[in-house]
Length: 374
Image (cartoon, rainbow, N blue to C red; front, side):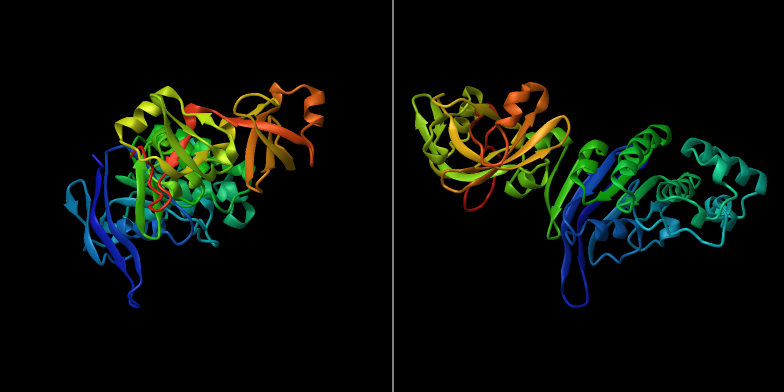
């Protein structure tokens, strides 16, 4: 078992700066948890408190039911992979991976067996006699992961391990971490500022801002039902479009009127708003770029706008458009849906019409920025 429990964990530095506020989280055995948020939100500090590399100002950290606040890192049975690899430059790959095992006075035949097994899993067998300087960034990161693997620790802690890699290597290493997790079948706590990594890797995601937890949920939960505007804009790429509008009751349902155009809210979503007794009046309306569709002039719900930027992303276009009142929106358009002549009509300064899908609209309180459907 390798459960981790944080109860009211707090970190205050000497200058009375609070880096983490009352952090509560239960992590189940063999769960892959991702801490995600912008720089300075407290995610790495929280990870370091779990590891024992930062003192805990208040609260408790438990691993398998044992409070570890006062235990040294080496006694917590955790393994940590750092952003900067932290390899010994004068040692070979083999010796880097074997280092902690030799500190434990493990017999050399067992060390050889463990190191070669980890190297085979990570695909670095051919590099065991090289020094770190002769390796690429991705290979160095595999060595750092291998050094953690051989310890057979209860919990794997990973602090932005892919941030120094280029985009192609990050994609490759994400897949390898998923495969590694399946092979090791242990508990992972992973820190990143990249929401794509969070969405693809995590069983659950902990979204943080200014030292506070904003939301904890599965990737689907935080994407489809963001708790507040911060989560809504942070999760998803490109980020959610947000605009002020009026939410009104009309018959048994609701309508919104962005840019003076009346749009019906989907029946199911209207029922949810009614069940929550959502107030009518000014709201912040959120619509993801992929949930905006092209419309035709004169079509009910069509919003006129002008293309400002056209980004060709391969399988889709990212259109940066400006409405008649100057509001900027981003629209994702699958290129497979477009005829060649249609693409020409989506260039800079082209006029087009868009509309929003009623069942995927999000509504936020303009003052608290909380989701009206929470």
